[in-house]
Image 1 (cartoon, rainbow over the protein chains, first blue to last red):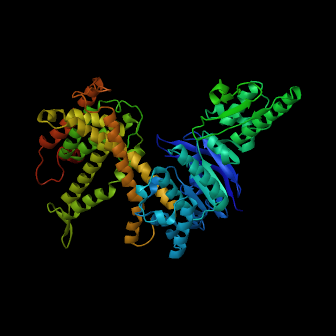
Image 2: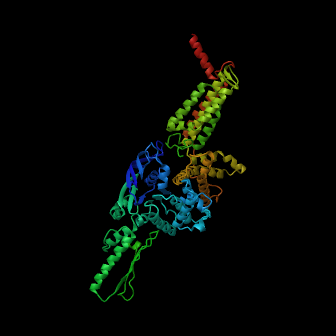
Image 3: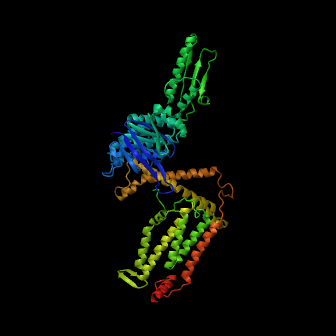
Length: 339
Length: 291
C-alpha cells in the first residue's frame, strides 16, 4: 500500500484536566497515492491534529494509523519513525519560524544531514531543492536565512522539507501571512512539487478559493469529525452545508449562483474560476450565435477576463458589443453580482 | 511539555477562587512564615486538616495538588535524609562513619519533610486558585508603599504579567519547533551528551528569535496604545475585600494562634522528645494507662 489508512482515530488534548478538549472524534480516512487533497475547517476542528498523527508527532490514543507500509500504532516491533519522516514531509504553519542555521545551505541541509547522507549527496539535494523553490543556489547558499524577506524565508523553509524527498507532502496553511505575490509563488510551487517530488500532497487551508484552484479532493472538518469528503467537482452540491458550518463558499460557486438567479443560464458544474470562465464564454458564444441569427449584420466580440487573485476581489466578466455606436462595456463585478 | 502542574491555574469558581487576590497573597505569606513555628504533631495534624479542608472547598482535585509535590519530591527526600543522618542531639540509635541516627533526628527529619510538603501544597493552592493577572494585581497593591520612594511599581507589575503571559505561548512555540525539527529527522534523545546538547541548537535559536520578535511586537503595541501617556492609570477590575476575606482571615488567625500557643505556652522538659502539646497528650495517655 502506498497511501495512508486511518481508522477510528480519536484524540483528546489535556486529558483529565479542566482544559480537556476533544480534537478528533472517531475519524476514519483513506488517502491514496497521487491524491491532491485540500483540508478545510475552522480553527480547532481537528485538521492539524490529524496531520500530526500522520507524521507520528503525536501518538494515537485510540484507533490506528498506517502510512505506506508503516503501522504507526503497532507496539512491537516499534514503527520505523526515521523512515516515516523521510517518506512524509511536513511544512508547518509559518515554517520560517523554524529556521536556525547561519547559512541557507546549512539550514536546508539539516534534514538530509540527519539522514546521514554523504556530503556530496546533501549538497546535490540542497542545490535541487533551492532551484525548485526558485532561489538561485550560488546567489543564496551562503546568505543568512534571517536576512531574507518573509516570502523568501518561507521558500527556504519549504526547501528544507523537500530536501528530504518525501513521497507525501503535508502543508499547514502554506500561504498564511504572505502578500498576494508571495501567495501566488507558493501555490505555483506546490503544484510543481506535486509533479516533480511528492506524488501525494495534502494542504490545509482556511481559504477555499485557494484550495479549489488545485486540489482534486476536498475534506471538510467540523467539530472533530469529517463533515464530508468529496471530489472537488462535487463541491457545488455542498454549498448549504458549508454555509451552515460558517465556512466560505468558493467565489466561482457564488458568482455562478448569482448569475443563474439573474437568468443567465450557465451550464455545467462550476467550482473553480476556470470552470466559471468557460461557462460564461460558452454562454455568450451561444448568445452571440443566437444574436447573429437574429441580426446577422452586427458583429459582437466577447472578452472574458476572470482573474481570481489572492484577495478574491478582482473578478470581472466583460463583454463588449460592437454593434452599438459606443462600445457597450458591460462589466459585472463581484459586488454587483452578489447583490 | 504542557503537563506542568505546579503553578497552573485550575478554574472551578469556588469561594477560595473568589477571595481577594491581595488577601490570598497576605494569607499565603503568613501561612509560609508561621508554618515554621509548628512544633507538635498535633499542630501538624491541624495544619493538614486545614489544607485538606481548603482543598475540598476549592474543588481542585487532590490528584492535581499531589502532582505539585511530585515536582519537588526528590528535594524533599534529600532534605529528610540529610537531617536524619546529620542530626547530632538525642539518644543515638545507630552510628556509622560520620552518619548518626538519633531519636530526635528521626523526629526532626519527619517534621522538616512535613513542613516543606505543607509549604509547597499551600503555595500551589495559591496558584491553583488565582489567575496570573489577579496575582500581579495583588502584588502591585502590596508594593504600593514603594511608589513613594520612586519605585516604578506599575511597570514592575506589567513586566511580571507579560512574563507570565508569555510562558504558555513560548511553551507552545517550543512544542511546535520540536515537532518541526523532528519532522526533519532531528533526534533529541540519542547520542552522546555533547551531541545531545548540540541537538538543542535547532530548537533554542528559533525560540530566542521568536521571543525577541514577540517582545518587539508587544512593545510596539504598547506604544501604539499610548502606554504611560497618563501618570495615573485606572484599573479595569477594581479589587475589593469582602466578608469572605474576613472569614478566611479569622480561620487563618485561629490556626496561627494555635501554632504559637503550642510552641511557646506549653513548655516541655528537655529530657522528652515529645514537644508542645504532644508531651501533655503523651503524659495524659500514660496516666490513663496507669489507672
